[in-house]
Amino acid sequence: MKSLRSAARLSAIVASTALAGLAFAPAALAAPVAWPSSAGSGSCPVSKAVDVPATMRDGTVLRADVYTPRTSGKVPVLLMRTQYGKEAAQVQPSRFQSPAWFASHCYIVVVQDIRGQGKSGGTFYEYRYDRDDGYDTVQWAAALPGADGQVAMYGSSYVGATQWLAATATPPALKAIIPSNTGDDYYDGWSYEDGAFRLAFIEPWILETIASSAAANRGDKALAKSLFADGKNPSIWLAFTPYGAFPPLHPDKPEVAPYFYDTVAHPARDSFWEAFQIRTHYDRVKVPVLAFDGWYDSFLNGAVNNFNGMRASGGSAAARANQRLVIGPWEHIGWGRPDAVVSPRLKDIGPVADSPVNELTVRFLDHVLKGQANGFADGPRVDYFTMGENRWHSATSFPIAGTHYVTWYLGSEGRANSSMGDGGLTTARPRGAAADRFVYDPANPVPSLGGHSCCSWTSGPQGQFDQSAIEQRPDILVYTSAPLVEAMNVTGPITVDLFATTDAKDTDFTAKLLDVGPDGRAINLNNGIIRAAYRESLSHPTPIVPGQVYEYHIKVWPTSNLFKAGHRIRLEISSSDYPQFAPNPNTGEPLATARTVVTAHQTIWHDDTHRSAVILPVLPAAVAGAGIDHPPAD
Figure (cartoon, rainbow, N blue to C red):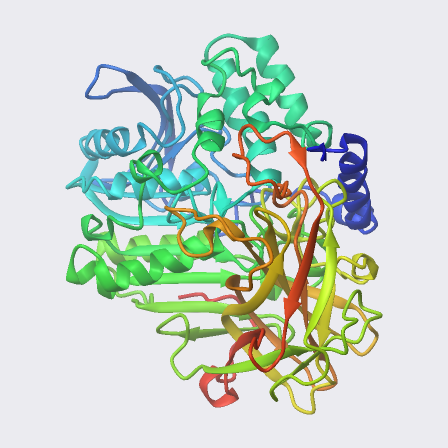
């Protein structure tokens, strides 16, 4: 057994991964900042009041900035509840327009610091108070001077969570929500992904933002400064284990970040996570939803689940009928635009990839809250961007009706290791050798290069990159199709059915779908992971028997990509993706306390009895339609 991290080696992996991405960075980061713009402002003059108090049911006072338009009549309220600072209001980097811009469209805009953050009172604990505080704030906002009693909410990421949690409390004054880049479950698809801990997101995010700002709220400026600094340079700490003793969040001081230690102490879906659920409470949400997300966002899967969950189980007929989701070629905070922080390949797509969030938000609000017949397209509707083609399309469902699911089988002569191996993908049943083998060493995991982590490509594994360099590793199995004779549109969620054995007590298996161009560049589209113990249930993990063949179903997150004629489809299989996910130590020890690692010997089977395959959602051209060359405007 070895120490759970060769810290120097893992830190080097993080650094080398960052450098691989930053080879493109100077031009991307040098763009002048010209956001927000006054373009598209409304006609109403706006006044601002700061630190306006609202008293919650337990007596805690939360404070907000209120932007009031000068109008002759009463108007609806647009509410943001944020832990990232009401003064910032999620305007940067090139995200939402300013609160005054929205207010100029004749809405009262309220931006509130949530409990224990910014200027608000109380103690912060992620998610715990946002359902009740959300309800109380919505009802308070509806009664503000000049308000007509209707409230909508907007915001991204955790500020999307504050909307969904409030909506599941069913406040009577809430009439719509506009969540961007947010999930349906704060266990799976947020803190974990099919049993694997989302390391590169959780640790830096908590350090740099919510723990640091909560310390500032408590008046501990020195701690706030040190937490922020550690979060800005996470490579120093990502290699540290055990996670339950993570030093920079001070495990001996429960006021600093108790939610982090609770997160790693609850690696399965249990009552701790059920207390914050969205996905089981759609019946309580009775309002229309306009949601936004991106193909490389950390919460894409949750956004799709929310859309489908509300269509099936929303709490009113109007809610079920009026769900809309817009998915672009975006990362978590990279939403297109010339001055946005977006990974270089996505940025190069150009203005067709710009997010329409601000303009569509106003049209949606005018339609839903003011009853305007302004051409806004009611749901159910999904607007989605197809990469490779670089055009926008729309559908009434996701996955899209008319999708053909095509099985591509893995095969080789037993040497699929690396892109120089003989791994193939075919629609015929597998021939050749029965299996491929590789060694997984948790002290030397496969480095993440792009992906769907959080929160910016300059600090974490997000976005679209050429994977050729890392595909030279022998612990990555590479299966590639022949060049396509005709273009193929792959749009929707992807499944990998993998038959595998390991000699370890527990392990992970990863999958990544790629588009390989004629020049050999291998571009990641999306990825997935499964922790072996969670193969049957996220609530009740069960051990594996070393040496026994198991069938694993790996959910590769959705994409929309046109594989052009002459391009090849590629699937990578491995057992690690670091630091996007915490490496599995292969020992079966609990996540919070594991200190040692063992090397695992992995076998991927693809004989006639064990048909390992990737199932691709192929969209016929007649179903996709011609599309449009600009972001959706109505």
